Amino acid sequence: MTKRKITFIVNPISGNRKQKDIEISLNRSLNKEIFDFEIIYTTHKGHATELAALAYMNSALVVAVGGDGTINEVSKMLIGKDVPLGIIPTGSGNGFARHWGISRNMDKAIQVINNFNIVRSDTASLNEKLFITTSGCGFDAHIAALFDKSAKRGFITYAKLVLKEFLRYKSLNYFITIDNIEYKKNAFLITVANCSQFGNNAYISPMAISNDGILNITMLKPFPLTAAPGIIFKLFTKQLHKSKFVETFQGKKIQIEHESENAHIDGEAISPGKKLTILVHHHSLNIIVP
Image (cartoon, rainbow, N blue to C red; front, side, top):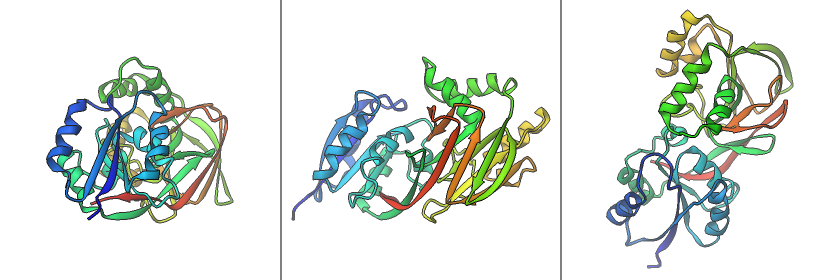
């Protein structure tokens, strides 16, 4: 029987894992009776996309080993292709993997690959830039921009930035069009979600389904400081949409005009300008899931 080739594209600085961990786990847990594999390590931002462009042409599966940023980079070359995406989550947030129920335990994630169960997932784009989990503007985009400039990475650094900036950040005015219906809003943040969470089980859009051809919009309105603990509790217990400070919408095409230059895609800071067009791309990515 001809073995199927898997290419593992590994971000070596994602999370706290060591390079040898993936090699040890693959040799221990991957079904080598049916799979051959190659491991390639990224060396710079955007490198995973370059590697995936070559890998998908001679692989039965391309696996992103890293966080949502690495998955985003690999996915860019698999959109609309028959070759599926596999995921071994080693990042700090792992929103996409958590949404699909892929374990952060490396051996369990590899077992998902062995089972080779393929589903078709939606993806989305902001001003033609791909995202797989969430995009948005407002406070989370402000934090993403600061985090991008930070010398230190990881959840603790991110949490410190949130606490530091929370009291000084001011809500912004937005003009929003959702499937040709117009709104004028003042908001602390606006998130457009393909997946239910940012990562770390922070469920910004708990009702989001990643293969229904619809994007979910969560708008957090200005709120008093005393309401913050309740909002945070709801964020981590899948109840944020029940808060009186939250409005939710659904749509396929979302246009946003805002006062800031900052936005984010999958938690990565971008500066796309003050006019945003966000589109869903239905069933555009084949992925391996439990």
